[in-house]
Each structure stands twice: as structure tokens, then as C-alpha cells.
Length: 239
Ligand code: FPP
View 1 (cartoon, helix red, strand yellow):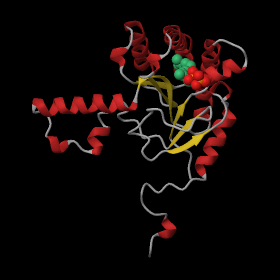
View 2 (cartoon, rainbow, N blue to C red):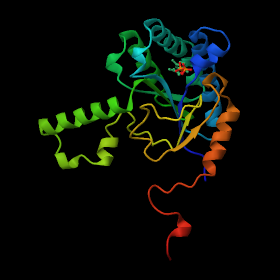
View 3 (spheres, protein in one colour):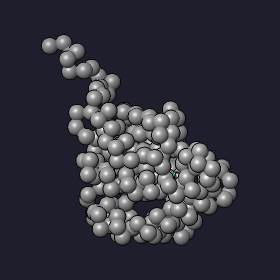
View 4 (cartoon, helix red, strand yellow):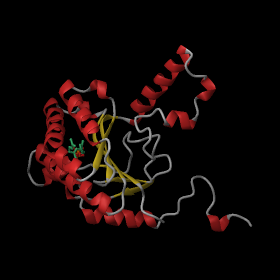
């Protein structure tokens, strides 16, 4: 099986990585940003066209204020420091999640990153920020309900295709592969609609330790999977 066009990653375990070293959680998140940089460089070299990363979930607001503020600060730093290099390397940045809940300066930076890089083609980096799968589905349902109420859309025009085309991920193909680090075995509200048929790879390593080799291994694991989408394997279909 070919390389997946779209790989999505739940970057988990920054806090435990830091704790194991007697460091503050912020040190783990900083090391997490470095692992993200390396992954963004490796992904297109390994044949991946879309990379989605879960950087801040709609549930992460329940963390202590200081950690929320650290994560906001790291996102700003990442965009400010890395945007030029991302652009130079042909990376197109897309942001998914509820932008209305974000501070104006962060919204501005994300908007700037999306506009500057809109024409790039080497890799699409999708940053899930203030993102939750249920929140995305509810916002989309509300948007379509409003269109129907205005008379702009017939209710029977709401189909799986038109729904998908109204999600934050519109025009981005579904991820064939979802990777989660840190040994936790769950999706945690990540891409609930889009991951319906994704292959899942769970790795024991903490996110800051994730490397190009882990990505290459996960792609090899994916290549050995048989994807049936609810149907039968070709060899089992009666001739
Ligand atoms: C999970 O680790 C990770 C996060 C909540 C945030 C992911 C963020 C980064 C990799 C760095 C920030 C990147 C950007 C672009 C802002 P955890 O803190 O839940 O770890 P734990 O489960 O071990 O406590």
C-alpha cells in the first residue's frame, strides 16, 4: 500500500517527558515544538502531503492558567520564528478549530500564516488549535441549520459530502493514518468525523522523543495494513 497522503498526530506526553527529567512542564512543551519542527521537515521527504497536529484542544482550557498561557506563547513564538522557514520550504499552513475563542493577536498571527503560505505545495501543515471534534461538528451543524433556516439550502441537501465540505477541514482529504504518542490509546476528541476509517498507530514514546525514524516506522506499519472501509478484502469477494 502506498504512503498515506495525510498523517494526523496527537502529540502527547510533553508533561511526562519533562517530569521524568525533573523539569517544568514548559520544558516538555518546548521540546515538543522542536519535535514538531523535525516532523514538519521529515514528512514531505517521506512522501506525506498533509500533516495535521493537535496543538491545543478545546478541553485544554481546563489546565492551570499558567500552562494555557505557556501554550499560547509557544504558538506565537512558533509562528513568529518559523513562518519564514516554513514558507521558504513550500509549507502551506492551515488552521482548524474555533478561532473565535482565541485572543486577537493569535488570530492575527494564524491568519497571517495562512495567507502568506496559501500558494505553497510541498506540504500542508494543518494546526489544530482550540480544536475539538465535537465542537467542529456542532459548529458545522449550526452553520448548515442556519443556511436551511434562511432558505439558502434544502434540508435534503445535507449529505455526508456537503457536511464534510462545511467542516474546518474542507478541501483537506481525510487522514489515512492517525498517530498518537505516549502510550495512551484513545482519540481524545481529535478529528472525530475525518478519522472514521483512519488506521491508528499508538507509540509508547513521549512526543518530544518522536523522530523521523518513528514517522518512517509508522508509515511502514500503515503499509502493511489492509483497509476495507466496511467492505471485503479483494481476495474474499466471490467471483
Ligand atoms: C500533550 O502533552 C501536548 C499538548 C497538550 C500540546 C501539544 C503542544 C506541543 C507539542 C507544543 C506546542 C506546539 C505549538 C505549535 C503550540 P501533555 O502536556 O498532555 O503531556 P502529559 O500527558 O504527559 O501531561
